[in-house]
Length: 105
Length: 143
Image (cartoon, rainbow over all chains, first blue to last red; front, side, top):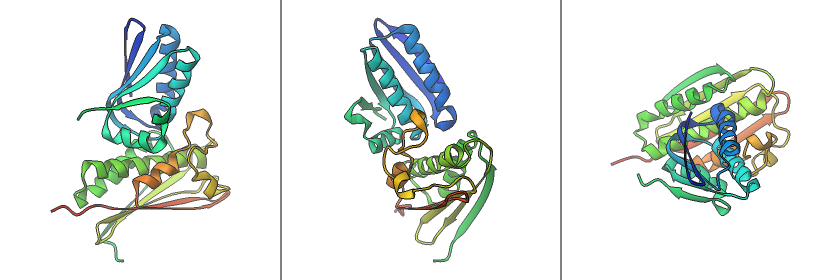
């Protein structure tokens, strides 16, 4: 799992690259929270275009990032979600509280 | 129904094996000419089941996980994932969406996802003895 961060203005984009499962989830979560704490963005975009696989471990990463941004009074979007990962997010119902957009493949 | 093909693998409950197990199950299923979506479903369901063994069956130690897969003539793939770990006290409760004993690092959606990504899901568990998860998924026959 690789993470690339891009900051412009108050917007921080975190690109997740590779497979997001339980094996890498804790490290990914710690890194995202660390980058939020360091940059204090107003908006966090989790860009999933580089994900080749995601299971329910990814739901916990999304929810924890969301909680972290809420504590800051900021907002979070999940963008460019590939089909397989979207199916996992759909099953979880998180789109009731978080704005999620699909990747146009 | 008589099986057409089968395989069996055994590995220790190390999280690095999650990717190995789901890839192996997907490679085995490939002989049924599945779509990428169908393969994605198999990989996701296996990943959830194996993660459960690692997180819940063997929380403080390494243990053995066994994955068996069979293919039937009607293009169904059956995957069994077995552990000899702690077991589940209340299977019905564990299968409820958002229920987890894994804290905020887990979403509690494992069984829900296994259920929605397969055709049938059977969970048999004995506290202190282990758990057997059986999933079946029919792969559509292509023209």
